[in-house]
Amino acid sequence: MKYDRENIFARILRREIPVQPIYENDYVLAFADISPKAPVHVLIIPKGGYVSFDDFSLNASATEIVEMARAVGKVARDMGLQESGYRLLSNVGPDSGQEVPHYHVHLCGGAPLGPLLAK
Ligand code: AMP
Image (cartoon, rainbow, N blue to C red; front, side):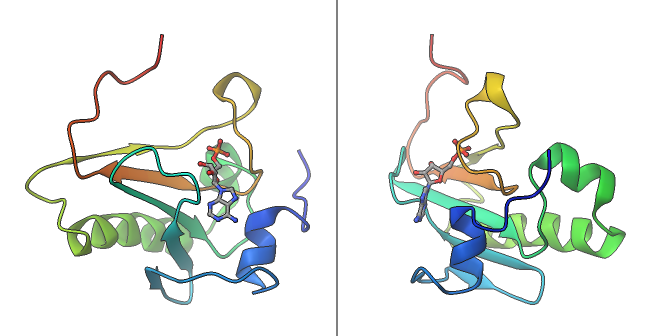
């Protein structure tokens, strides 16, 4: 799947849509999900244009991959979730229901999250 430069997260990265960063560096941006599914629901995205984890894991540089992993852990700690715990989720493709075709990790926590998947 070719990367769509007009997807909403690409527009957020270009600041065509306003965003309040929770964390940002040269490689990643983290911001609150507009429709939170938990008391804490943050999206962490790479600044590079990757459609999904599949694309990212295949084509991103080692630096981008490390920076993404480090950022997810940092945001979780910054949000105070290290002890209580949290869930990471990344939808890939149609069966997952991925809505936005720019790789993102959902970081959810702040309360018991229940079963992994809805029935
Ligand atoms: P996914 O289904 O994994 O692609 O998740 C996309 C997520 O992006 C959903 O949880 C949406 O609520 C969230 N989302 C869509 N538009 C925005 C936006 N403008 N700002 C923050 N989150 C958004």
